[in-house]
Image 1 (cartoon, rainbow, N blue to C red):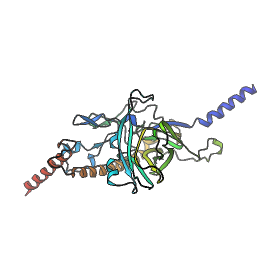
Image 2: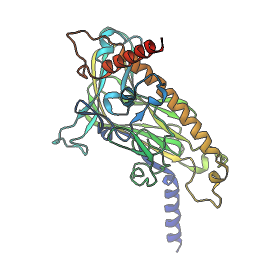
Image 3: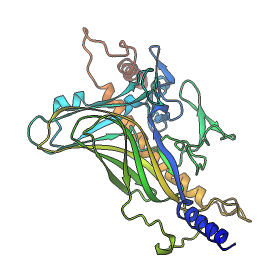
Image 4: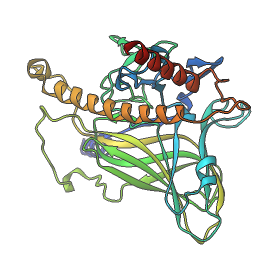
Length: 374
């Protein structure tokens, strides 16, 4: 009897030491293929993550122009931001992110799918340099889950969220970018961060950048990329305490404190001045986190949010702020892209029928309206 009780006690202690940790997919780049918004016979955006920034464009743009004002987390839309030591005309022009197809015959679970491929041009001379790989926009943490059509237009908020609530988001709360698209909700203490990447024997360092619900961005050193082939690099929290009895217990009000979350801000590649410069090529498949839940998921006798609506108002205000910031940035890029000169012997990727022609039509309409007014 004593032996049985001792065994049960040991099992309970073991379970108590690991029960609070959950693993979730923060982002899975194999899910970010282009499957909507056709232009010249080619799909250009990702249906799950497409965002329409025409709401911030104003009334001077035509409907045809506004239909082009969409972007998403599709891989070619990601950006490479170089520090001052690495920034020059060549590096700015050629450093880019692409969708890299993995061979179907590859001995990996994601064979035949696209992963993130990155090219960065570091200076060839002795200089410390770094490059950030950023999503095309600050990933919204409060965007409600809703399906999009083949043109990238969001339909009404999905009542049935079963297609969004997968095993990849154990703390799913009904927002669009959960489930491997950049956001994980209900995150307390992060225990481990994992990155699946292909090394190409470069001596450069890799960081993962995460932003929390307070808007604080932190970077986590994953290790060096001086290896060949696929590998899962891990960062383990050195201050993580497994034994509950030695933890500092903090109690927070359950309502109306918003649920803590983390979202991906991007990657950072660092090159030491003593290491080889020039081209860097890297491939990334996903980012996972192991974390403690911030609050337990349980039903309460009174639905506080239905009664007071405090969190809803806060999240709506944050969502509007995120969309306004994102929209203004994208509209400015749209205008800058429209200013690119095109001579008679040159046609852009839209065969002269896309950005520049639409901008010309808009300018012509504006001049005609002005003449009519006079």
